[in-house]
Length: 191
Ligand code: 5GP
Image (cartoon, rainbow, N blue to C red; front, top):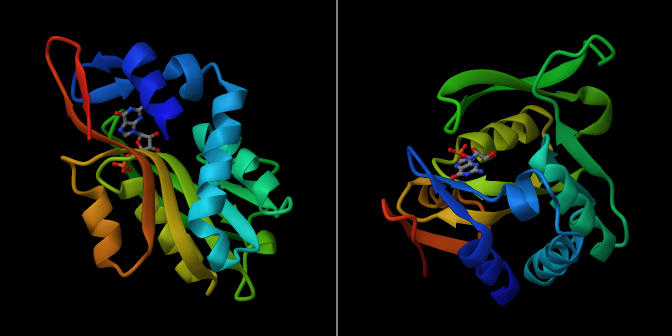
């Protein structure tokens, strides 16, 4: 995914605590051409797995999950909600996540109505760092007895253990850009 790598190198910003800010094209403003390319790439990587649903986490996962759904003939996108919103069904699968960027724990929820044992789920997220968010999405699928057919992340910080952690659980993990290091001088090294 050269387009993604070029975007990261030209518009990504290095923030304290090893945070890569990509608000310019994914986490705040969205480059929809790039999202579409990301969707196409995830389709190529996971088309043999025949998912019938994409699961992600609000908010940044939604755009890329929707873009990916288009290539899978518009399968539904289900996103885990981060707060107990008053209009959400009380019958939910929930899991706790430790946020890397905010250094705090929060719960995510998915309504039992939309996830069950007949689902073949492709999990998609924007970043894979320590694997906390991905692991909680896996946890929710397990609680629903849904089958996980793959896990995709747009950006992986390979010096953190998320990728290995999820692979060691036995899942097929694919990442589109691998960050080798974020440096104090603001430079970004991509594998
Ligand atoms: P993990 O749960 O794998 O430790 O971190 C992944 C989650 O934390 C992602 O959902 C993403 O929102 C956030 N995150 C982790 N590292 C970064 C980063 O360097 N930059 C941004 N923008 N988000 C990150």
